[in-house]
Image 1 (cartoon, rainbow, N blue to C red):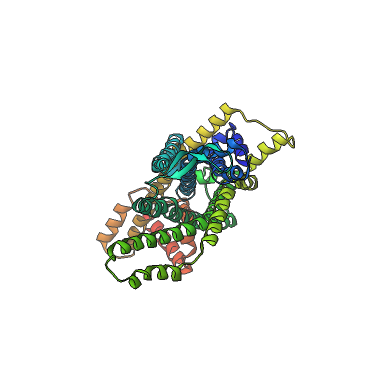
Image 2: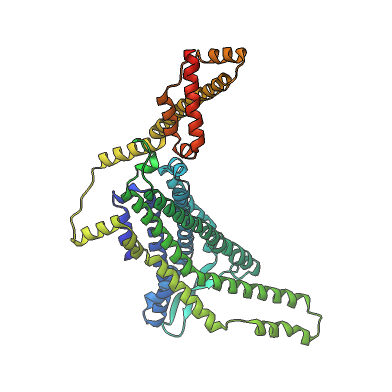
Length: 454
């Protein structure tokens, strides 16, 4: 039910404006399909076995045969959609300008389509693991009844070692877990750094020109919204990791037991000529090092399946906590508040204008203004150096030096307002000049006026 609400909300035109919501829409659909498949894999067979209905007993193998590969494919798709959402938010937080150029509507759509295709292809072999056979029931119905069995491929030890131990562990646990942990740790570090810089900048007085950089154009509301979206995605990833940790531990234990069984089979084949007491040692070894008995492991598997279902159905509450737009749509459905619809054309125009300002117009204008200011400062500093050189020449009594000083003075004179402009452009440097240096510069200006009159 929660994922149906998520799908309807994310299909709303206002929610489709954000690229993150495209990922969340497909993620909600995959969670919905996964919950339906879990019902037919875990609950429906129990209901059928406890009932006396012939149709339930006859058709539950068909549903199980279809739900098993589809459920694994949707689970893989949900895992990698979560990874894509985290990578998308990492680019938006840690590389915002690159994300605006790289992450657009078309790459997001191709990423979603690629994750779906990858999930289907990587689970194609699961369609060959189960087989439906018609058997004759003598106990209850006294007639033909369909049953489900494991195929010879699924019972092959090498197949299980490659697909269940190596491929499933790498694709479903190791690669996604490592990627999510690294990406989200960097997002948290970037959030702390941005918060510290924002607090430091808010304490300073604004000394910049009226034309501000694109980072200062964003309002406080936009920054708070971006922050809430980031926190929402971090919460989704945290819930995902917590709900899949037990399944990861169960998978590791199952792989260890499978490897032990495979080793025992090889030893039984290679040790046929050994005495009987040596052949019994692997069984004692297995019994000594077993961590869980069969009942405990089955209970752990059931709990992990329940946690995976909980992860797929709890995303609605995260959206309600962190997304104000999601809450407003839900409140409108419940009749708690009136909804204000925005003009789509105006919204598109504003978004295009903002993107143009951030990507092209303002950076060029700010860069040109900065270049003009640097050129003006270089010109004033150059004249100041010429002034100091002529002053040093006038301090000497040599006739040659005096002629050089008068030749230098033929250039336009530096007035008092230009020197003050240098000091105003470099307030930090001017504040560090000692009183002796200021007195010395004033004496040089007096000497220059005297030499000019002479």
